[in-house]
Length: 505
Ligand SMILES: *[C@@H]1O[C@H](CO)[C@@H](O)[C@H](O)[C@H]1NC(C)=O
Ligand SMILES: *[C@@H]1O[C@H](CO)[C@@H](O)[C@H](O)[C@H]1NC(C)=O
Ligand SMILES: *[C@@H]1O[C@H](CO)[C@@H](O)[C@H](O)[C@H]1NC(C)=O
Ligand SMILES: *[C@@H]1O[C@H](CO)[C@@H](O)[C@H](O)[C@H]1NC(C)=O
Image 1 (cartoon, rainbow, N blue to C red):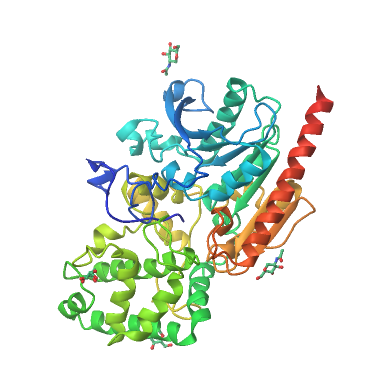
Image 2: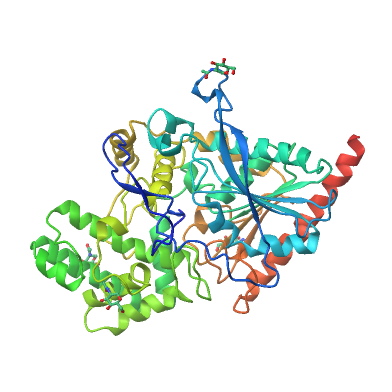
């Protein structure tokens, strides 16, 4: 549910991970999930650049067992800027890092620093354990039993300890904390408010699919909503996509593999039904990414995306010489943004995993795959009826088989629902669930306000956590108004918390 891609500026440390023999020779340190990222653009020297300092905190490896291997500590990375802080008084804005390199989130969440400037806040972006550079056991982190300490609960406890410790160190004990996050990070920010209301006064959970990932959604929802985005641009567009996948299916059925290779510019000739499934998943993923990242300006968050990628994708589907060539061109928007791929090496550009919306590449993808095999449920299917993609199931049974084989674990459907109040989110307080109508994750989240302080915000024309991004001239009015509502609620929570703290002394 994250993403990312392209050209490796990052060091390519090839580590051989023998994950029960599945992933071998995975590149470490690629910052993101669905894609290889371009590395960090730290040099866009805008006048108001936040100038984060990168630091590490000694973190407890196992918060919940006093005599396991988790006796020790590891270095957890975080980014901090005091540039806007009304020292010792202003609030702390704490980003609960998700499934990737923390720099990627810090550099694509300009709203948080803009708000910090308005409200005099200290800003911290905390990296999630097992991602980026916060690997508790270095390259061994993804082996059993070490990988077992990758859980939502451990990650939340990391954030809780970090908040407590940094408040002490910075003389910020009187400063209310607001958690921020997008996507899985948004889930974590809401969970922080639910689990640690003693530490966190409120949370902005942007594009957080708290319901679908807790098994409370419809498995058809995700790809149906990707389809709606393309249909919303032009009904002919989804018809063209269906047509292209239909042709692909015909060629595959006739084992016209060479022909498929030629027309789709594949590096390797597909040779089995498994290869065809992988090819279809690779192609479907291009649509997923364009829908999630359908921002009105070009971005470099999860790879390079042009402005309005859904529109650009539809135009590709509707303008070329034939449907399969058009589909290849569409894939190129996502996988060949650098223009450097002479052919598509589908097995290195896309990994199949326990998240049918993609796991990215590199070690971050392993961590996410493990999470999708344990607590986070992502059983989404496409069926060519409620969506425009070839039928590809991913049932609980298929998930269980995959996870048992790849990680030796059996997923526990329903755990997140129990642990984080899936049925009773209205009993929480001070949480904003914001969602963009264009985002295929939106309908897996909270869409209507549940109480006066558990508030849902819809962002018309908004894609995946657009509200967390910095202001842009191309922003739709809806996101400007959403950010205003968010800013007002957050300021109010901070004031209330301040009063409460005063009365408690
Ligand atoms: C935990 O720490 C104590 C004190 O440093 C040490 O004696 C003990 O061996 C450690 N246990 C494990 C399981 O690492
Ligand atoms: C990638 O883009 C370049 C430049 O436009 C093009 O020459 C090449 O054929 C593209 N590769 C694929 C696989 O489509
Ligand atoms: C999708 O369904 C249409 C009929 O609605 C059919 O013509 C097409 O071949 C199907 N595509 C796939 C990939 O199954
Ligand atoms: C947001 O949109 C959904 C459906 O598109 C609707 O059901 C819901 O009531 C809207 N919520 C708010 C807070 O406007």
